[in-house]
Length: 58
Image (cartoon, rainbow, N blue to C red):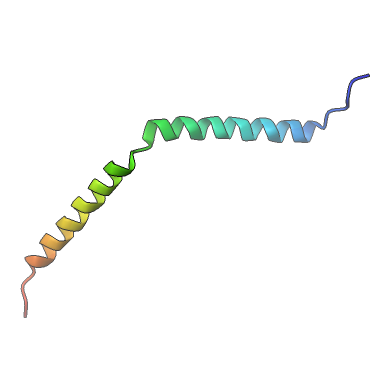
């Protein structure tokens, strides 16, 4: 005799697996290496410093 299957648990497990697969695809598609993130952050900080350096003092 086969084991009874909890359909709610099956449905939730399937949804979790699909969500995980979609998240993994997005990580590959949109994820950036740490070095790129740090370079972008450094450029943003430098632009802010340069802008602050051009402000007129009163």
